Length: 149
Image 1 (cartoon, rainbow, N blue to C red):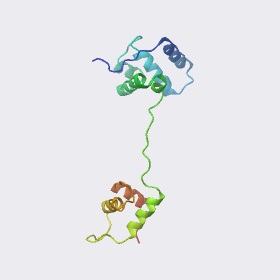
Image 2 (cartoon, rainbow, N blue to C red):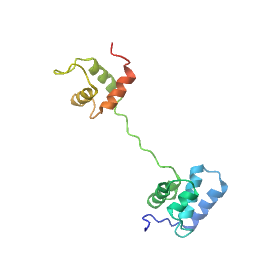
Image 3 (cartoon, rainbow, N blue to C red):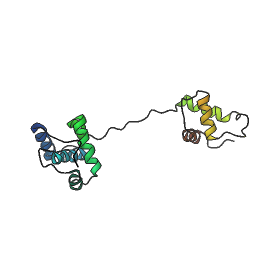
Image 4 (cartoon, one colour):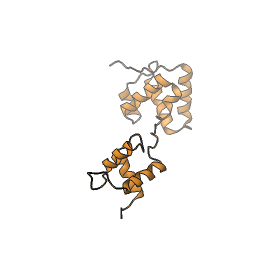
C-alpha cells in the first residue's frame, strides 16, 4: 500500500533529531517521536508503520499520526503531543441560577412535574441557553440541589 504521508527528512533535520535522541534530555514522548521519524524516513531506513510501532512500543496509528503531522505541520509539530481542543462551557453561574429557578417554578400545563428533558427544552425555548442536553441539566441540578424539599 502506498503511503499517503511520506517523511523525507533534510540532512539538518536528521542531524538535529539524532542529537535530540542521543542527549536524552527531552521528554520521553519527544524522544520516541524523534526515533519514529528517523526510522520512517524514506531517505533513511524507511521502516513501515508496523515495524516502527513494534520497535517503539506504540500503536500503528500513533506512527501514522506522527507521519501526518510532520508532512502537514512540520518537524516541531510532529515532536509535540496532539493539542486538545476543549469546548467552552455552556453553563455559567447565571445560566445555572436560571435553570434552578426554572426547576423550582411550576411545571407547564399538562405536566405534573419537571423532567430533565422538559427542563432542557424549556431552557432553550425561554432563550436561557442556545442549546443544552438533558444530561447537562442533570449535572447542574445534581451539583446544586441534593433534594427538592
